[in-house]
Image (cartoon, rainbow, N blue to C red):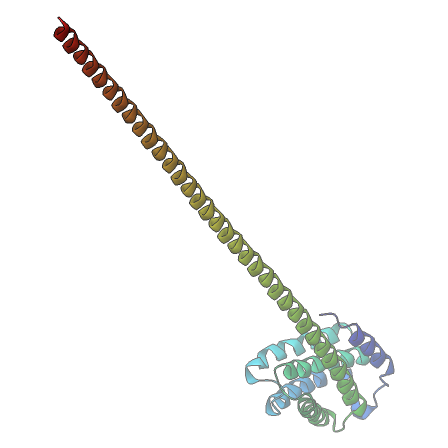
Amino acid sequence: MIRLPVVLLALGLYLSFPAESDGKSVFKDEGLVEYFLHGIIENFINYEVIKAEKETEVYESFDELIRTSRKNPKGNKIKHAVASKIAEYVTEAAEGGGDINYIMDNAVQAVAQAYEASVGAVDDNFLDSIREMVTVMYNNDVEDEIKEREEADILEEEEAMAMEVQMQAEQQAQQQAQQQAQQQAQQQAQQQAQNEITENKITTTTTTTTTSTSGSEYQGGSASSSQVSAVQEGLSVSQAGS
């Protein structure tokens, strides 16, 4: 996650940190820094800024800051690093569903108590820097979350549109298949009807031909009988004349 505004704010806060007075020089002594950071962790747990199971992780993170302070013993650098780390934990706690203002107030109070327990006074400038960092980090996270939701909504809408297009394509394919099946059925019915008509014509023609042939044969047979009768009559007349 890119936090460019946080980097710019952190740089501004670092440059604006005033030199600490002797009563607030917690970041100029390694022992005080360690005592201060451990006090913050205990207070964070008591004020429910972090959960108890996260204690080890926070200790390791703060111990890394202590090791960094040994390499770079300048007070303002470690001061800025601690403020930034505290702001990260506060923002993370708010992302878990807590109220950001409530968590930030508890965190600031926990830091103030640890500060006072370490050097007997509180650095209001340090507390203000924590508030400002938390505000920027949280706003950035909210913006990122909104952007992610918008992207998720767009993706969901695109998927829904793609699914709708696919469903329409499937419906069109089904309709085309049904139309083709109906057309084939109609063609088959028409072909069958045509075949039946053709068969009927063939049957009718055959019957007519058969009937005509039988009639001709009958007529031929009748003529022959008449001729026979005529011949017989002729013979009878001839015999009578004799």
